[in-house]
Amino acid sequence: STSAFIFDLDGVIVDTAKYHYLAWKKLANELGFEFTKEQNELFKGVSRKRCLEILLDIGGVTATQEEFNKYMIEKNEDYLEYIEKMNESEILPDVPKVLDFLKENNIPIALGSASKNARPILEKVKLLSYFDAIVDGNDVTKAKPDPEVFLIAANKLETSPEKCIVFEDAVAGIQAANNANMVSIGIGDAQILSEADHNFNDFTEMSLDFLKSLMSP
Ligand code: B16
Ligand code: MG
Image (cartoon, rainbow, N blue to C red; front, side):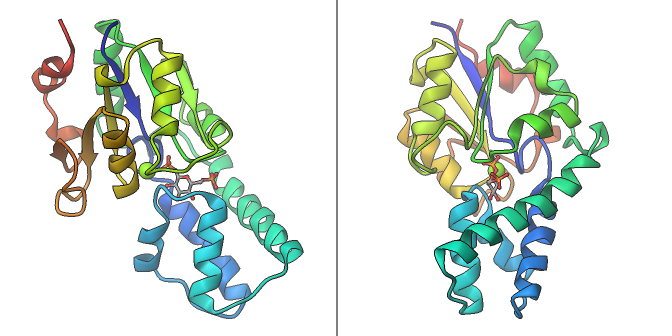
C-alpha cells in the first residue's frame, strides 16, 4: 500500500479554536463565571461533551442531564453562527500548497477530526474536494489520544497505519497518532508537542522536499 496523509482540522487546516472559545465563553458568562483564552487551550482536540464537563468544573457549576444537553445545543448553535460566516480566507498559511502537492503526487488524503462539524467547515472554506476520506466526531466512539479516529482513516484509505503521516496541533492528537503507529507531525509549539516525530510552527516552515521524503517510493 501507498503512503497517506491525515490532517486534523481545528488548528491545522483552520483556526476554529477562536470560535469555539467565543461560544464557550458566552455560555460561561451566562452561567455566571469567566472563561479565559488560557483555559481554552485545554479544549483543543477534546470532544464537545468533554469540553462542557471541564467548563462546568471550572465554574463549579452542577447541571442536571437535561441542563447539560441544553448547554451542549446552545454552545453548538452559537458556534455554527460563526462557521456560517467562514470563507477561504480562514485557511491557515500554505495548507492549499501542501494539499495541492500531495494531490499532484497521487497521495491519498484524509481528515481525522474530533469535530462533528467538520464537513460544513471544509465546505465553507472550499477544501472538501481534496479529501478522499473524512473521519470526524460522528464516526468515533473513543476520543484522542485513542488511535481510533486515525485507524478508521487508514482503513478508509485502504492503507496500513505505518504508511500514514498525521498532522496535529493537540497533544492528545499527537499521542493518538503515535498510538496508531503512524508518523506524527506537530503543527504548533514544539515544546508542547514534544512527543511528535517532527515539529513545525506552521506549514510555511515545511519544505516540499520534506513532504517528499515522507512519501514511500
Ligand atoms: P465540535 P479537531 C476539535 O477539532 C476541537 O479542537 C475541539 O476544541 C472541539 O471541542 C472538538 O473538535 C469538537 O468539535 O463541537 O464541532 O463537534 O482539532 O479534532 O479538528
Ligand atoms: Mg486540532
